[in-house]
Length: 373
Image 1 (tube, helix red, strand yellow):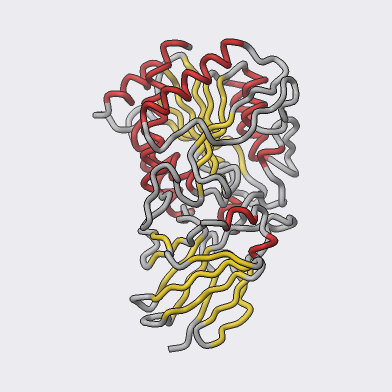
Image 2 (cartoon, rainbow, N blue to C red):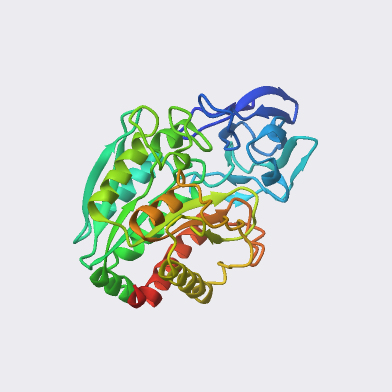
């Protein structure tokens, strides 16, 4: 059977340069009007029983080439369960992985995709739960809705917003986990949190980039997490809409969920460099980090990004802007594309399931410290 390779699917991204016997030569396409690229997602037909080697020859020019070291590609036969390709290597600017398909179709991706269809199902399921309201905060450049789900009746204003960088799909898996817990009527911690806080959750801030198969930008080629100081209708309507909603509600606690290409750990990054940093913000941020360490061995506080120097925080980034603007305890939550080196899983690596369970731990940690706010 003839082998065909296609990226004509939701969040698809690959270019086929050639198929020569059992060797498939590929390139990743850059984000539209941008130099960023690293996300790939494609399907292969006619591969049954054949061990094919896939070579992404422009991997060395990707946004984060260090992300390929010790990385293993994701594969699936049904689009639901994603495992890791053991035979993955990176050398001389080329990412190679070899796989023998058991069936006629197999899919490969940088990380397990979170499809538009699943996104819509998540939003509908959550919105159907008692006490949940769904609204659109605005529209993207491609005309998609920026949905926000609100639940809880407590005085603390909590915001979770995810997937500013569309290729970081673990962020929406995390949102899925958070909504699953918060809408569970039998979950004791969720019930208590809903009494103490009002949650506003944006599962996907960049649906245009998600559908287009982008790594980091929206339909205009703009990195949304560098727009929070001055968002605009023509460049970053997604940020403008979310920030306007935050201005209306205020923010006490916020998590901006992301994925990191190079660091094989789960960690958070804070707001140490903002001009108006207070002792209270610092104390609560550290208390939350310590609580999360206690709640799950998938989280650690030793590895991460270096702290900004006092007064040098980049206010175009969400965490810094939200902390500065509202006096909030804000953080960027980073999950790995690779695996968690503290607790590796050779079959699945860091995965959708672990992202979802991390969200449950994040909520439990918030419950541990909410009385200090």
